[in-house]
Image (cartoon, rainbow, N blue to C red; front, top):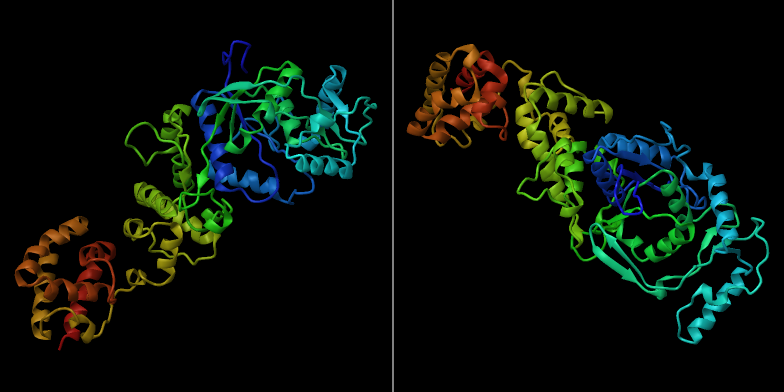
Length: 487
C-alpha cells in the first residue's frame, strides 16, 4: 500500500470484473497487465467480483471469468474461489462494509439522503437544457436533509469544488476542474453500492497499491479523488491503458469488428501463451526488438514505462502469427500432446500417426484447429498405409517425361535410398542423397512421381519430408509399387 509520501511498501493489484457477460480482450488485457506488474515486483494479485448491478448480471459469468483467466495462466493470490485475508471477494457479500463507510460520510457531512423522485430529477435536467447549461446535481442539494433509512439513494456531497491534478503512471500529469465534480449516488435504493463508491472502499480495505484501468475511467477520476479526500484515504496509483481499436484503427474494438468471448480463442485452437503474448503487445513492448516471449519473459520485461498512450489496433492476423510462432517453438512431443488434447476436447478423432507428423503440422498450421482439420480431412492418412496405389496418369501429370523414363528414375532413386541406414533416414539425408540426381535428370521428372508414389495425392509435402515421415521401409515399398504401375 502507498504511504502518505507515495512510497510503495508492497505491490498489490487487482482485477475486478462485473459478471455481466463474456470476457473480452479489453478486460483480459487489464487483468494481464495488473497480474504481470504484481508478479514482476513479487506482489499480490487479487480477483474481485463487482456484482452490485444486479439488473445486468448474467448467470454463470463468475464461473466463466474464473475459467477464462485460469486457461490463460493468470492465477490470483486472493479471490472468491480461494479466499484470503480480505474475504469476501464478491461485492454483494460485502454490504456491511459499504454501510459502515456510508455512515462515516454521513457523520462527516459528506453524504445525504436523496429526496428527489426520478421525475423531479428529469425536470432539473430539462431546465438546465432550456437554460443551455450543464446539469449538475449539486446545484439542487436540499436545504434540509432527512435521516437516511436505506429506502432512498444515499448521495455523496462533494466536499470541495476545485481543480484536481493527479499523476497517471502511463499518461503522466492529468487534471480536471469543477465541471467534472458533482454529487453522485453512493448506495442505491435497493441497498447495493454504486461502482463509484464500492471499488474505492474495497481497494482501501484490500490494500491495493496500483489500479490498472481502462481509459473511460479518466473522466470520473476527480469524483474518486473527492471521495478519497472526504474519507482521508491516500489514493492508489493509477495506470491507464490505451484503448484497443478495431482493425481500421479509428474506433474502439466492438462486436462488429469480431470482438468475442476469450474462450472462443480456445475453441479456435490458439495456445494460451500465444494469446497472452499477443495481448501484452496491444499497447506495450519490452523496449527492444523481441516479439515472441514466454510468460516468464513477459513478466521479467514488464513495466508501465513501455505502455503507449495511443490506441492499439487489434489485428487478428498478427494473433495468428504469434500463435504459429509459439506452435513452432513447441517440441514435437508437446505439440502432439496439445493437439491430441484439443482434438479430444472438441470432438475430433485422434490418430496414431500424430506424433510422426508433428513437425510438419507445426509448419503448416497457424492454429491447433487448422492442424486438427488437416488430420480429419485425411491429408496425412497415407502415413498409416504400407502401399499407396496412385494412377499412372497422376504419376506422370507433371513429370514431363514418359512412363519408361520415369520408371527408370524411380529405380535409380530406390538404389540411392537403399544405401541410407535406417537410423539416418531423415528428410535432410534423403534430400542430400537424391537431389543431385534429380537436378541432373530434371526435378519434375524425378521428384513429382516420387512424391505422388509416397503420398498418393496431387498436393502433399515434399518427397524428402514424406520419406522421413513414413520411414525407409514404406518409402522403398511405395516407390517399387509405383514402378509396377508405370507400364
